[in-house]
Length: 457
Ligand SMILES: [Zn+2]
Image (cartoon, rainbow, N blue to C red):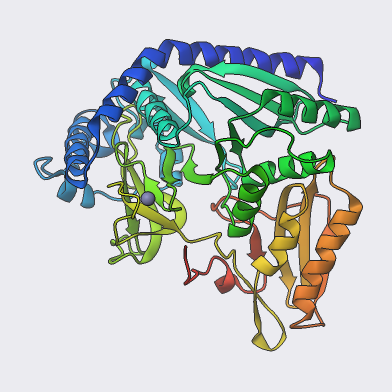
């Protein structure tokens, strides 16, 4: 049970955050209205980006130590940007002050800590202007999804608290937000199910695994029991096609995933066609090869982001560590924003079995996705040993885990009966490198991890 002090602390932090958002709301709403009026075309978006990039480069040349004397003629901002070095997380950590605005106004910015799988936190400073743009574009997305701004949002299994918690978030369009914690006994879960049904969420928001857990929890208590929400909005993990299908079927709602990171916020969000459109009003995205050169023609490389708005700690050509590709074709939905194809995670990797036979990891991941879990990971320790590491939730049953293990083992044994498939429910995940949320790691053969997949939706 969490201590009372922890609960009070969380409530205090939330109140502070909501008051902050309320102060910022007039700016957010003004930006929202501006963006709604724009009715962007490819040409108008490019013009907006060019102007914003030029202003950003002029700013960093004058006020940011890392860039003083190093920026070319901002008359051609795209050439000047391409000539700048890329920046990695380690550069920001080592040279925090050098990457900040010398004239930073502490009353108009806030610092956030991002985590990441390396466990080393990174401090990022967002100015209010940037926050207002980011929140405003989130509100535009809500409008495009056909939802009212003051919708009822549910964050399932959001905290380690043993309670239901509601508040109003000005920055999300004065939306009502309800969340519940992942810790509790059977009486708690009965109460949570009751509250979810009474709340009738219009948007369910969270990691795909948490949204799936909600589906499992409701199923275990007799079914959904409330009208179909307008959207299931996932983020923070790569959404597998199987998970998307299951969520869409259970909630009878469109599922839209987004991709982002604490350093810059949302980078791209899915449209109705499933394409991840880049938030081009705020961000410029490049896809670079290992030598730092642009990958031509929709090829796969590292996603590198430039923030066009945030002046407090400008991120220019920031290496995300994620792999992707810029789509060469415009999306049929008509948005002029370029679409990003996220490569890693579609097929997390392949196991190399006896005789060099390869097995897609998805065959092992699917049974695990059918079980309510806080997280899972598939590790190939040795050529003949695969471990399924899981962090169970209170409602996870031993029988469900055993069934998932048996199904995963069957998929492996169909190709190679000599491989042992073991389940570990201790949540002792393997961490490696900077890429977040690694669902598969081969300790046998690194070349098999994050291999690009040919087929895409
Ligand atoms: Zn689209």
